[in-house]
Image (tube, rainbow, N blue to C red; front, side, top):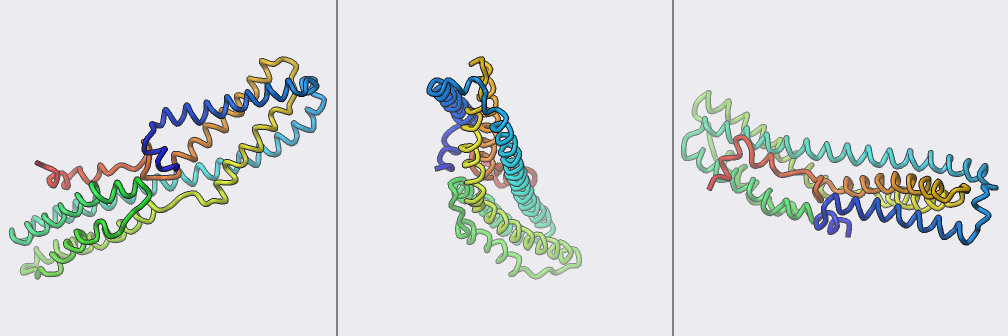
Length: 263
């Protein structure tokens, strides 16, 4: 469900719905409770409610901060993995210039097939939360086959061959790491703490009585907006390959790999 929302709605729309919806529900709940129990406006229990609200708010804030920082770090790590894999592929493409024309042509063909498979086949699968190792397995093995069947004849070719093999091994490592990151999501326990904490904290603000209704609404709405925006960050950062803030496949189309996308 979360992947469908991220892939079918803009971040702005999700912001309006999440933050706006949280604020509207919180304000409505506060007003209804105030009308049901008019004595809350006198603030008779504000001391106890204030202490409880402060304690819960501190604990919940620490949990949200931990979750958001973890997800942001995960997103940055995924971007680094993608950029590194694309860079290693580009270096192999450049090293291929030192090989004989027939070998270079075969290697370019295999590299082209692989980057196209990553962007056109595997990337949509990762956005949908269903990464497949087999989507690029054949084209990736083809690159290995070209290098394994080639025997360097000169010292110059030997140097570039060793570099190409080393970079291809790095690509294999980054490819596996990328697919692993595509399967990652926030553990259920942290999801319960993040979203369940909001269900506990926001209603507590209803009990903090203020004589003027406007001040009460402003207080409740401010807390609800902050929590709603924090939950939005958790929601959009949880899946690094889905939504507008997702990792882009652009590195596979740039630099030395751009030659494989020319008409």
